[in-house]
Length: 288
Image (cartoon, rainbow, N blue to C red):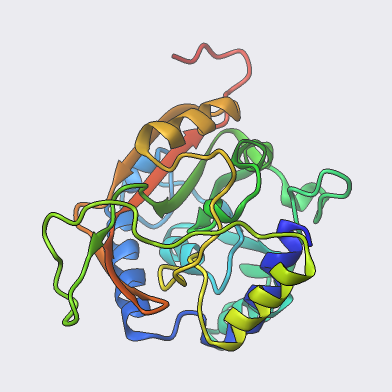
């Protein structure tokens, strides 16, 4: 089974309860608050910020959009968001929430697709190019080839547009006690990890975990067993490296000022979230 197919199967199974746990809600709000305080750092003009640099039109692509965390983060500051996810059920939840909020498809709309498919990337067409901002939330550790993923997303930006991702910092975990309090001196990488396989045993394992109600970590509720892209390092320097290898410039990686609390497959952890930004080069412009 391919990585995309395994992701599709798993997230289809958990779409209805994906981000409903109380700690989900809290972490999502913390991510939202932090990113909204970093609009200047992101490095593109937005709308409705009250700044002299505000523009009339800002287009966002939310890739591996899930139920729409990044769409909600930037909703007040963009004029159109298009989402893509390999999971039809996630897309259905995303669109249902947008319609329930009274937002028309012309402003927010998601579709099923896989831009990383080397034989038949989808969707395609002019409306899927030239974005000011491409976002991907808690998703890159699910991608089989992070350089290819970042390069593909870069190609859907306008020149000067920005790719922004968040994920978990490697080595940034802290164990929690039974009451959820951090245990000092336990820093490390404590979320159990596995790769999606391609055989029947891996498919059954994936199904069994879905039936047991575990979650992956594309939103911060994450199950204890999460895919980690082969050969990828989610340290600050590691993310800078694969962004640069994808041809992005003006790259910066920062972390949230405080850890966030998560319960994952029986584990209680405090985890560090990183944000990474990189820009598609402007043709003919010298970039440091």
